[in-house]
Amino acid sequence: MAYNILVADNDIQCRRIISSILVDDINTVYSVSEADNSIDAWQFVMQQQLDLVLLNMHLEASVDLLKKIRLKFKAIPVIVLVQNVDNDYIKSALDNGATDYLKKPIDITELHARVKVSLALRESMLEIQTKNQRIESQNYDLNKLSFIVKQTDNSVIIFNPDGEAEWANEGFHKMYGYEFDEFVSRYGSNISGLSYNREISVYIAKLLERKKTVNYTTRCRVKYGAIKWIQTTLTPIFDGNRIEKIIAIETDVSAQKCIEIELVKRNEETQQLMKSLQEANEKLEKQRAEILEQNRIIELERNKADDLLLNILPIYVVSELKSIGQASPRSYKMATVMFTDFKGFTKSCENLTPEQIVKALHFFFSKFDDIISCHYIEKIKTIGDSYMCVGGIPLRNRSNPFDVVLAGLEIKHFMSTYKTQFSHMDLPDWQLRIGIHSGPLVAGVVGKIKFAYDTWGDSVNVAKRMESADEIGEVNISSCTYEFIKDFFICRHRGPIEIKNHKNVDMYFVDRLKPEYSLDEDGVYPNEKFIELLNVI
Image (cartoon, rainbow, N blue to C red; front, side, top):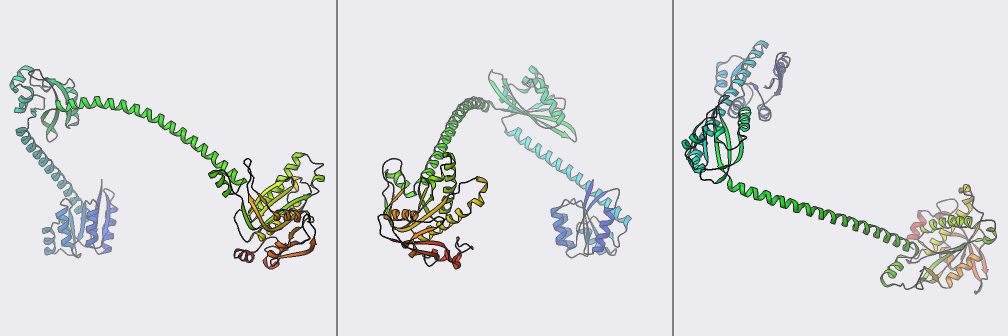
C-alpha cells in the first residue's frame, strides 16, 4: 500500500532530507509532496487524499493550518516538527490537534518510527469512524423501519436468520384478510410457506449470498378469494457480518400491475403501429430519394442545357428566349470585327481526308477560341475555314479595338510558331490572313428555330474585305480601327486599297505593340502600363 505524505516546512534542506528518507524506505511505499508555506500546504490538503502531514510549528500560520486540518479532516494525523523540545510549542500543537512531534535535526530511526505509529493511528481512526457510521446507519434504518411499521398499511414481517416468521404488523391482516397466527397455523411460519412465489428460494439464496436487499413481485389469492399483486422487499439486518433478522415489506401493487399490464398491451399495439409507420416511412423515404435523384438528374440535364445554350448564345439572349420565347437584336454604335481564313485552303485540302481537315480546323479554331476568350471577345461563327469574332458585344465597352488587335497579334504569333510547338501532330502548313474593322453593327438572333447569334451591318462586310485584302501572316486593319490604336501599336500604312462595293479604303498592317507598352520582345503581350491605360479608356 502506498501512503501520501505532505511535508510543510520553509526549510528546504529539511524537506529534502525527510522526502529522501521516506522515499528510500524499502519496506513501505511513500509518495511525498512538499510545501514551503501554509497556503500551499492547505491547497495540498484540500486537493489530495493525504494520509499524513509533517508540519513545521515555526512556519507562519502553522497553528491556524493545524486547526483547519483537525476541523475538516479529523482522520489525517499531523506530526509537528520542532527545533528544540519546547514544552510550550509541543503543548500548543497537541492542544490544536497534532498527534505527535518530531525533533530537528531529523533522526532517521525516529522519523520512521513516528511516521509508522501515526499511520497506524490513522488506520485505527478510520476503522472506528467506519464502525460509527455503520452503527449510525443501522440506527437510522431501524428508526425509519419503526415509523413505517406503525404508520403504513403495508405488510411488515420479521424473520429470524433461519427464515422463521416471528412477528407481523396490522398491515398483514389488512392485506391478506388473515390474522398472523391464523395464517401461520394454516400455511406454516417458514418464509417459503408464507410466500406465493415459487422462486422464493432463489431470492433467499441471493439475499444470503450477496447480503443485499432483494425484490420480487408475485400474484396471490387472499382470504376472500380476491386476486392481488404483491411486491415484496426482503432486507437483511446485520450484526457485524452475521444476518440477525430479515425484514419483509409487502406492498399491494394490484392497481399499478393492472395499469402496467394495460400499458404493456398498449405498448405492443404502439410498437406494431410504429413498425407499420416505420415501414411506411421507409417507403416514403425511398420514394423521396428517388424523386431527389430524378430532380438531381433533371437539374444536371438542365444545367447541361443551359451551359450548352450559353456556349452558343450570350446570356441576355438565353434569358429572353427562356422568358418570352424571342430575343430582340441590339444595336451597337461601335464594335470591332475580326475575320480570319486560310489562303489557298481548298487547294491545300486536295491531299487531305475529310477527317484530317476537320481535325486540323478543330486544332486551330480551338486555339483561336482560347486567345479571344482572354480579351473579352465574342466568337460569332466559323464558316468552312473562316473564323469570325467581335469585340464590344454583347457587353458594350470602349476597349474593343485594342482587345481585338491584341488578339489578332496573338493569333498571328501562334500561326508563326505552331509548326515548332506541335511538330508531333503532323499539321498542314496553312497560311493565315487576318482582317479587322471597327464600326457600328446590329447583333442578335433571328428566325424561330436553330437560333444562332450573328451580326449584321456594313462594318461586318468591311471587316471581311480587310481579311480578303490581307497578306499572309499579317494583321490588316482599316483606318477606322487604326485611329483608335495608333498611339500604342507600330503600324505600316498600306495606302488606299479598293474593296468590293466601297471606295478606296485606307489600310494598315499592325506589326506589334510599341516597346514601351510591350511585355515581350516580339510586342505581342501588353505590359502593366498598357493594361492600366486600357482600364481608363
